[in-house]
Figure 1 (cartoon, rainbow, N blue to C red):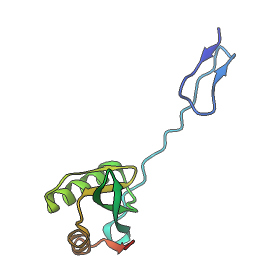
Figure 2 (cartoon, rainbow, N blue to C red; figure 1 turned 90 degrees about the horizontal axis):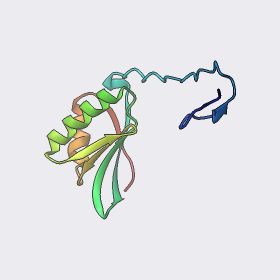
Figure 3 (cartoon, rainbow, N blue to C red; figure 1 turned 120 degrees about the vertical axis):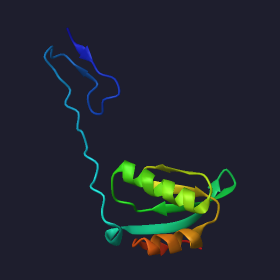
Length: 113
């Protein structure tokens, strides 16, 4: 009996009855210390007509990214989200976030206008 596999990259169908799909479990990268992080801070005006402050370049686990995002949202007193290695903060808080990240020991660079 042949097995069919949905949503598996590269494997569509196998006629081998003993086939076992090998999933590539990518381990999350280890979180770098703040002094080794190269963060980029920019302003985005393309999100449904609203202004958002974006922090890119975080290297580390998704739980550490969410923790940093939560700290920034709390510091600014606004909402936001974290996904795909990016922290999105609602509103223009570049200066406040820039100063806080520097104080915490992160290497941060402003990008954009």
